[in-house]
Length: 247
Ligand code: NAP
Image (cartoon, rainbow, N blue to C red; front, top):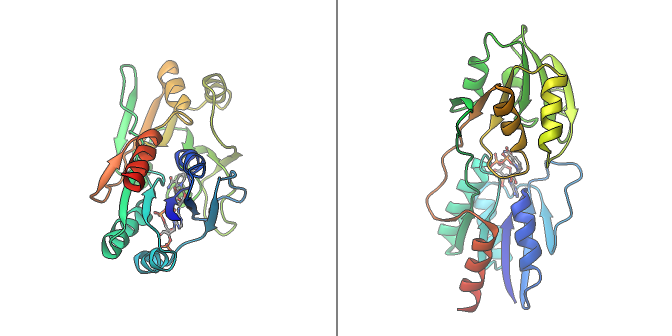
């Protein structure tokens, strides 16, 4: 029996697990950080929670006799990706990163590109009503802007002790349609969106809606990725697995 560890928490990771779980003689283990209260169902075996850094992940790879690792985490999940690359190298386990392409700026887009959420907060001076779509973990960065009202969308509510900006929480999970995103921007009189450059289709409609309505987007650029083999779609990751296992 061959064992594959998929580092997940994304739609692409779930889709890859679904396909790999159908292969004869292959056990797939998907790993989730445990951030969302009700994660979507994933095919195969699932483990939840951190490994304990690079060393903990290395121990897991050895104890579970993992043959291949596919890191299909979100492009902004930087720590786990660096830990995985290092642990795989140290343990001699083959490793692939599945990183969906970033969104490209198109004609009509008014993007203000920044390197971090901290820089995003700095460029918001002068705006009044902001649609914040960065998730719930880094809301505190935007909490010292008393002149701005925020619509904050996320899957689960922030931790009770977290400092959050003034405004309204919207608990919702993609994919989001263009019609709904357009209606949201109009209903809440949004004058700027803050978004990570996540890539993919599920959350792209807000970027199109902003373009259509002539609204700017503060676009947080992706963090660096570790060196190593990269593919950009599920099909290519699946073919890599087949090649490694059966050739
Ligand atoms: P991160 O900063 O890279 O990870 C922080 C720590 O969480 C890691 O060091 C690791 O703990 C643990 N961890 C992260 N992903 C894990 C996984 N798939 N399985 C087991 N442990 C994991 O990651 P993050 O940005 O907090 O994201 C957490 C998860 O949410 C990821 O799985 C990612 O795919 C998903 N996600 C993230 C975003 C985002 O914007 N960041 C968006 C959508 C989904 P140890 O060091 O103890 O191993």
